[in-house]
Image 1: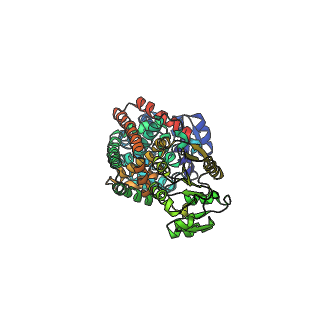
Image 2 (image 1 turned 90 degrees about the vertical axis):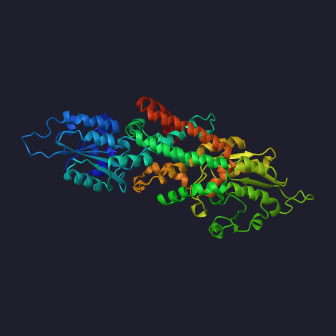
Length: 276
Length: 276
């Protein structure tokens, strides 16, 4: 996500610095940013916008480390330096926005989440067009300045995405259904297939299985962070899913063609209209 | 499926006839076959291979209609005409193969199922390369002649697919997991999303939701036929899926990152290796 953002922002920032603890990513990022480094402290020097693009629990660690990494970001005697805007790209928002709220005043945080996940990670898969046409959720805090809100909106527009402001809880309830539930459904599908003892099974998979299981290939670190930090909303979404699944099972058991057709048709109609 | 087969076989048959009850499809098929007609009886005249490419319950109707449609296909006094091979492309096999077994002796049936479904139907979506590199299951009956078995194998090879012979019950148990379960999972996902009252939800869907829900757009007639004719195997697959889902729900509820990571990693490893 961070690599794709750097590519999408190329030529649109006065100066861009990339920080990654992996030296290979630092090397790969050289062409995309003005300076890349594995050292967070030197990377953050003189920044006026920090974008945190890591799994959720790493974002939480980075937020608590920020203060010590930038000693005295705004000396109380000086009004010359601007506050430092902090935006994240994390997949869940309530825990991050709450941690952001504890940042000392020189930091000016806003939550963010672009709706364009991929099941592959790393700079090698970075794509300048990843954000184009996608919804980019912004979650301003009560303390977020107008300046940072506008800056975040300009960043979203610069990469071709559509900004939508949402409260953290609403974001988390929605993504539990649109993103985290599909992941759980894909994992359970893979597990059901893995529990079969027929080794012919894998030759029998076609595009339907491929697509329905795709999210199960997502990075476990990223996904476990999501499952833990959005636990309550995900359990709600799963309860809703299980209810729908149980109704479908009961209908299949009854084997009434008309009742089955009536049950699956609204999903078919909506899904056919959604993506062309 | 039938349109794609006609395109894939073009130039490889002495004569190809297309039959569809929809006049629009008959018109569209003109370029792909030597003769196309909405009239089944005239379409079947002088055929030595009949391929039934319709939803499962229509295949069952066609099989029971075949005898009357081809009056006296092999006069008992003549040995000049070859038996008529009958192949189907239906998604479930036990009920079809059982119906095939009741065909009178001039018919020489074999079950078939190419593993390359699409969520769009109709000749307008036909694709000559649909079968290329895909598994094509053949289900010979005890009565199937060597000649028809070889002919079906030649047809599979001609369209670039890989023939795999399976018993009907094994085919149905495997596709219940690889194909019908993903469909049910996709429908339940769409239903869970539709039951949400937040109209922002649809803006929040990205590629993960798109792919996981794709099969829900499948033609209801085709899918209801599958759910009904493969009911027992699908209920088994759904019970297996529900068990996996419930384990995952319990793990998310416990919120132990290491246990969660251990649980999702085998699915991630297998899925990453499967499709590149």
